[in-house]
Image 1 (cartoon, rainbow, N blue to C red):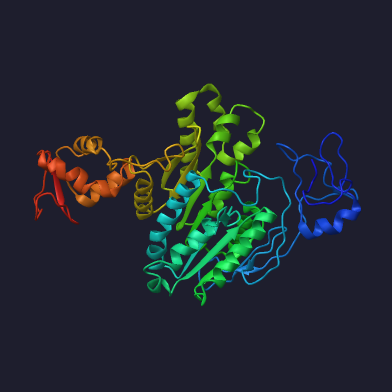
Image 2: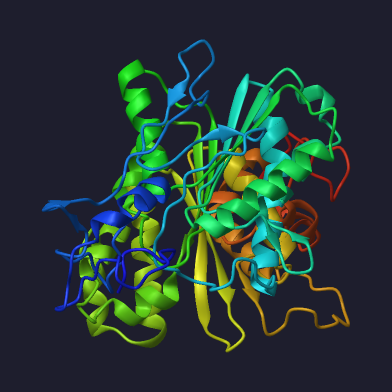
Amino acid sequence: MSVTTSLTSGDVAGRSTRHRRPVATKALKRLWQTGFRQAGGRCYRPGGRVIREQEWTLFDGHATRSTLDSPGTHPVTFRSCNTTWKACTSTESVGVAMSRSGEKDTVWELKPHTAAKHQLLTGYLKAWFPILSRWNSRLVFIDGFAGPGIYKGDKPGSPVQALDVLLEHTHKDAMSSSEFIFMFNEAEKDRYDKLDTVVNEYIANHQPWPANIKVKTGCDSFEYVAEGILKHLEEQKKNLAPTFAFVDPFGVKGLSMDLLSRLLSFDRCELFVYFDFNTVNRFAAAGNIDDRLAELFGTDQFKRAADLTGSERKTFLHDLYQSQLMDACGFKYVKSFEMINETGHTGYFLFYGTRNFMGLKTMKEVMWNVDPGGGAVFSDILAGQDVLFDIKPDTLPLQEDLAQQFRGKRVSVETLEQYVVIETPYAAKHLKKATLKPMQERGIITSPNQKRKGTFPAKTLVQFA
């Protein structure tokens, strides 16, 4: 396999098979301009990236500065290889030539599960922006695998939708004293070029552009972006500003648990990450990508899946990744959302990690909005079908759970809400009218300070039989 995908002559590219050959010296200038990474099947191979008897993994590029740390500190310096991070007014970029993963075209069709994923993202950002900006003067949104920024038919991608949330927010003026930094990264050169064009056009169409909103695009691997941030923070002994990292790659490569744990170790950082269950499930027992899976999970415990099948295997892999996000990354709360593909099988899970109860509460509300029947699953098969009746969750299991958990106790409605959000699949919105009201009607609960029966405002005490 050739080292790059953009060389014009078949005689200049190196090869990494048993017929390997070094990259021709005359290609050096072109390679220096575009950067390259050897791609050779399931793993990197020696011999295919040698120039004048010296092995080159990545050519160095440029770096600019960006303010990602807390206010009052020096700006972050990106020292990652072969990338130029820049403000959107610039037209310069340095690309990364690598093997194509996932979708093959530069721009592709928007699939139903992707639209649902965007609903989850934007639904959460609508709450995250105003809540965090009340107490913080700088917020960071990182889209680590931003893609081209658009889909076929000019349907907006995650970068545009994230910007829309802030610019169209009803409380935008109240957030004007906080600085918002959007970082959109895409490693594939052709997709990055499209992304940069889309973002520039977006800014041009929204003039005058708010001075407190900074947008940057970059063309590099997510690993290098994250390592650049970490290096600066370590040098400056500073903490990362409150950050929401949307990490949505194709496949399982380039997303190590170690990297996530170091980048998101700061208390006010949150994660929304793609877990490619389909790939993990197929290769967990194959033995040919164990190194990559060990990086993904941060452990080799995934190998235990070899003795499991069906739903038991699926649950094991899901729970292992969830527990690693909690143990390795230090997230107090982790919640997942399952995506079913057009064949009826699980394609991937989206995992949300946070250390904040309000964050978990908000994300669960958003998940239930996307999946009114259970708050945990979206299926491409059912997408677009007409619903003949309103889908309402069955709260009887929740009623029984609360009755057993709090039997004979008197607790506040706030305590019950915490229990529902943290310990059950239900959202906070299911507690009062859908659960406590029918429980009171059946005589299972009473209240000593309730002003009106069937209502449960703040500080209401609930007595369980």
